[in-house]
Image (cartoon, rainbow, N blue to C red; front, top):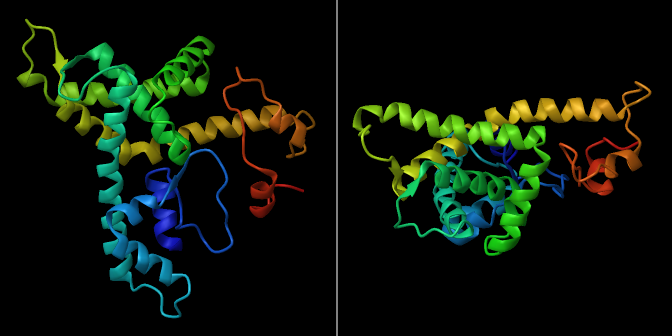
Length: 244
């Protein structure tokens, strides 16, 4: 479980509830439930739940096969989240959409992907309002999110430039959009590393005394316009040793 948890945290930037190390409780933004296992592969979910109490645990082959299976399930889930992103932006998946429309869809996909189990996949009005507020603040986190989706889209355009007719407007099918989000899901962890460095810089900015500590009231009192608004509970911070 620990090896699988670390793989998805480092490679995909995912913290999966149900695969966390012993004693660690995830109560923070960006957590993805392992419900995907229960729904799509109940046998695998049952095996994982028994490993916690098993003396032998998993062999290396078991770990590799389990990781590969879970990774495929998460990539497949990306397509389901893309369908929700289409709906949140007023599109049907059988429609071809413009580049600008696809960019809005990809941004929505990243928002609900980052939200993990807390994502609301049906409130289109609330989702659009939240996006508009984020655009107006033009925070560093919003800028890096837009940059990530633009890089993914530009990469696909470059790979398909030989098949694009320069004399007609470029439109994108749901199939192409699915390829893009699967690529984004694979590289999310590496992209998130830069965001983590920015978050660390934000925390250092709250440490006015240079002591290496941030007062808890400052940690929680960031304005909504700040690049990062921290929501981790005191229980979680204490469990990971971050709270004096």
